[in-house]
Amino acid sequence: MLRTFSSEMIRFRRTGLIGAGIMAAFTVLVTTLTFVGFDESAGPGPGGGGRALPGTSDLAAADGLVSGLASAATMIGIVALALFAISVARDYERGTIRQLLVGEPRRALVLGGKILALISVVAVGVTVSALGGIAAAFALAPVAGVSTAAWTTGAAVSAASSTTVNVMVATVVWGLAGAVLAMVTRSASAAITVGIGYLLVGEQLLQLVWDTSSDWLVSGTLSTFTTGGTDLVSYGRSTILLMLYAAAFATATFVLFQRRDITD
Image (tube, rainbow, N blue to C red; front, side):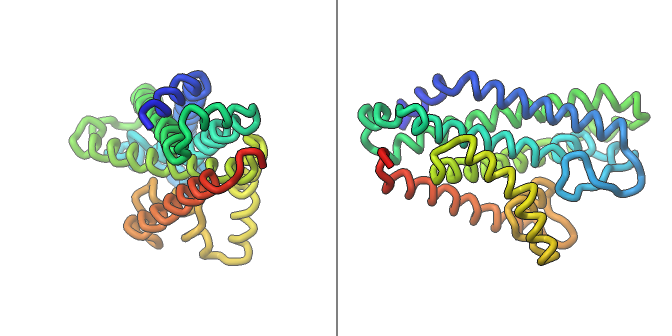
C-alpha cells in the first residue's frame, strides 16, 4: 500500500495542489464576504447550508476566527468530491487501471493507497484553507471594526483546531462520496455532475417533501457536524450519521472495485 500511496501522491500532485488552492481560495473569499457583509440580522450565510451571517459579537468571539472556514465547508467538500472522482475515474478513462493491477494485483491495496493519498491532499488543503481564512480574518477585522482580543486566547486555539478537524473529516466524507460515484459511473464528469446535482437539486426536492430530511441527509449531516451540532441535531448524533455515511461510501467503493471486471 505504501508503494501505491507514494505513486498516487506523485501522479496526483498537480491536480492535488490545484484542488488545495481552490479550497483555500474559497475559504478566503467566504471569510472576506463574512467580514464585509456581516449583519446582526439572520440570513443565508455565504457558505450555504442554512448558516446565518454572524454579527459583530459573533465574529469577535473565540470561534469567530474560523467562521469563514466553517461557512465554506460545503464548497470545500464539493472540491474534494471532484478530486476523489477524478482520481478514481481517470484510470478507467485512460485505461491505466490494467497497468496498476499488473504491478499490484491486490486490489484492496491499490485502492487503499489511492484513498490514503487523497485523504492526505484533503488534509493539506483544509489546513492551508484554515490558515488562509485566519490570516484574512485578522487582516479584515480592523476594517470591519471587529475586536480580535478573544482570538489570541486558548479558547480560540481550541475552537480553531476543532473546527479545522471537523471540516477536514467532513471533507473526507465528501471525497468518499465522489469515489463511490466515480466507481459506479467510471467517469469523472458524470460522478461530479451527479454529486453536485444531488446536492443542489436532489436534497432540495427532498426537503420540500419532508421538512426534517435535512437532519439526516448527507449535506445537512456534514454541515451540522462541521459546526459542532445545532439546537435540533446534537454533535454526537451528527457524528454517528457521518460515520455511517463514511462507512457506507468506503465499503461500496471497495466492494465495487474488488468485484467488477476492469473491462466492463
